Structures are given as structure tokens and as C-alpha cells.
Length: 528
Image (cartoon, rainbow, N blue to C red; front, side):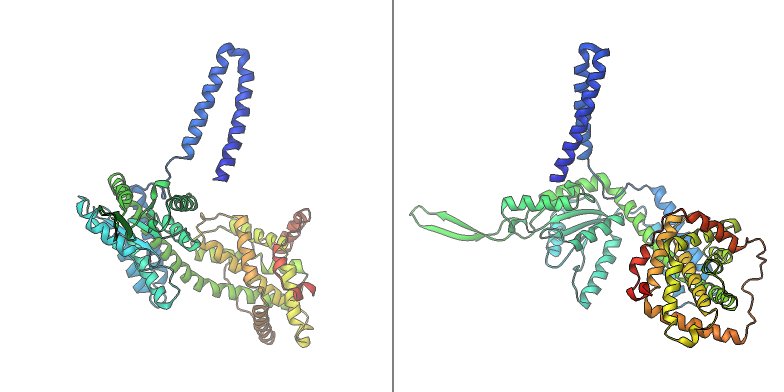
């Protein structure tokens, strides 16, 4: 409330300044009508401003039938692509997963015109889910003309093995629901708010209920209700946060008799759910069709996400061998012909052919020019973030533990080249897994992914294992220097990587060096 008040004061001050300015400028041209016009305009502006701030929010954007059908077509496209890419591979459970995904899509398609609303009561332990479900079924639901399916879920937030199973079943019911009543018997916890946010993101219509309001004094009831509304204000309207009492506590009643004696007994008040039933009736009346469409839209998006995840898993399994092949070819070249760090980056990171291969695998269809752009962008990011310098120092530290291997001429360059190539490949995989338009190069996104990938792959245990693998690989290669070609396609069109990096390095000299990754490096590596 304090934040809202300060915001209102700031807006009021800005508005007042604006009105004074208008008044001073319009007085010369409008004469005696100027004050009335400015004041009237000010009142109208303030009225509209506060009306808009209190306007009813929706916890999900309106969804129409066209949007649902478009989402269905998109999901089917991902599923069909998954079927194509797993067709020639033996993947455990792939056939069953495809069958389940298609079955879910078909079910949603069949039920788009259903007239039954699925209402589910959800919440943690002992918040009154079953009591509310039975109460609504016996009173409000039995009087409706609208077809209604009403059920409650198993409890949430139970930190036990059985609780995990129960929560999974609860989410299964929630995904199939059109309208969800989420119960709490106190102020919202962070976990409860996360559940509500997740439901809203899935386009579920939610009504948040404070049950057992009779456990609080009248002043406490209103204060608690206001707190809950404030916490959920970005998700729900105030009308959709309601206080109820499904099973009120018995109250002691005292009656004075005619003979002067006092008679006492316990009396159980009637359940207090009229505010809820009124709100539910309004929702069903005005949003009935929208509930089914929004729920279907959310379910389709979840299926698409699941299919996309499965497709990315299949593609990653095929992409990793390509990266392995590229890193060892680059490592062998650098090992046989040692060169400075900048040329090392040229051999390891600026590999347009690897970009082309991975982009084709992920159906991105990059041209050679676009592949060069991505490769050059990644190389500039590696320089600017200090990835080359830091990784080379880290690998040198690991190599120093074995003097015999460390003194070998190009071993440091070979291992570093393999490591940089791997970082570049893993960055590309995650970049292509995102929903980006074909051929798009987003430098900021590439930088974010590269920082994360480098942090994940700079830990000492991983570096030690990688260096050992690379050393063994290079030793065996030295005994048999003949290499198999990585690709049969001519690469004469590619510019000399040394020239690319020298030009790029000149541009980067004027840019401030920023290395957020350096802050994450172990002290022993930085010291070396």
C-alpha cells in the first residue's frame, strides 16, 4: 500500500506540474475559459488514471478457437518432426512417447467443443479441500444447469516419498482442469505463490481462497485477506481472492433464563461460502466457453514443450559426436603445428563448417555467410569474455602436474584448441535448441549461453578428465598422424581464419575488456 501511495503522489505531482504548464500557456489564448478547461482535463485524466489502475486483470490472456487450432498445428508439427528424426534410430521408449503425445493431441481436438467444465480444488495439507468439494457438490453445483465435474486433488508440499507421488497426481488433475480453486488457511508462502504462478502460466483460471477465516478476529481477517491480495496482485484480481469458512468452529452461546440462571451450549455456524458461490456463478456465466479454450491452449503448449524437449534430446545425441570429431581434428592440427593464442582461437572457435553442420541438424538452414557470421561472433565473444586466456591458463595449470607431457611442443595448444572447440559446439547446441527464427544471430543470447557453458565446463575435476582424454588422444595421433577428413565438402570459400581474427582483434582493442567469467574461476587458476 505504501508503494502504491508513493506512486500515486509521484503521478499526482507530475500531473499537477503538467496542468500548471498548460494553464500558463493556454491562459493567453483562451482567456477566462482556460482554468475550466485545464481543471476539467486534469480531473478527467486523474479519473482515467485511477480507473485503469483498478481495472480488472485477467490471469490469462483471452484465447480464441483460432489460436487453439494454430497451437495444435504447431504441436503436431513438432511431433511429426520427432517421428522423422527417431525413425532411423533405436531409442528406448520413443515409440511409446510418440503414441502418448499424439493421443493427447487427439483428445484435446475432440474435446474443444465440450460443454462440461472441470473444476478442481487444490492446496496443501489440511486446508479444507475435501470439505469444500463436498460442500459445493451438495449445495451450489446441484442447482446449476451447467454441466460440471468437481473434484479435489491430493495434497501438495509433502516432503516425503509418498508426498512426491501425491503431488504428481495433483498436477495431473490440475492440467486437465478448466477452473482451479486454490486453498490456503493463512498468508501465502513462497511455494504456494510459485504454484499459482505456474498454473497461471498454463492458462488456468484460478480463484484463490483463504479458508478458515473464522479462526481469526474480524480485523485480522481483513488484514490477512489484503496481504494475500497484495502478494497475488500481479496474477489475480481482488475479486478472485476470497475468504471462506467451510467448517466453522463451534461457538459458545450463552442465554439468560427467566429465573436468572444462565444456559450455555455450543452452536456450529453455517459454512460461509456465499461470496465464493456468487463469484463462481459469474465466472461460469460470462467465461464458460473461454475456460475450455484457455485450458486447451495451455495443455497444447505443454505437449509441444514436451515434444520439443524430446526432439532436442534426440538432436543432442547426434550433435555431440560431431563436436567430438571437430575438436579432435582441430586439436591434432594445433598439436602438429603450434601457433599463438589468437591463431589457436581461429582454429578452434571460428569453424564455420561446424556451425553449418549443427545448424542443418537443428533445421536452422544457415547459409555459409550466416555460418561465418555466427562463428565470427562467437570468436569475438570468446576474446572479449577472456575465455581463451582463462581456459589456456587453466589447462596449463593441469598440464604442469605432469612435466613429461607439459614439455611436449604443441600439447598445450592442442588441448586448448579441443577445449575451445567443445565450448563453441555446446554453446551452439543450446543456442539452436531455443526458439529462434532461422538464420538469426542474437549476440546477447550467444553471450549468455557461452558464459553459462564456460562456467559449467571450467571446474577442476572436469578439466583434469578432459586434459587426460586429450593427451591420450594426441599421443595416439602422434603415432598415426594420418587423419580422416571431417567433411568432403570444399572449404576454399572460407577466408583465412588468421585474417579474420586479426581484423576482429583490432576492433576489440578499443572495447573495454569485460570478463564476468573470471570472477567464477578458482583462485589457484587465476594465480597461475
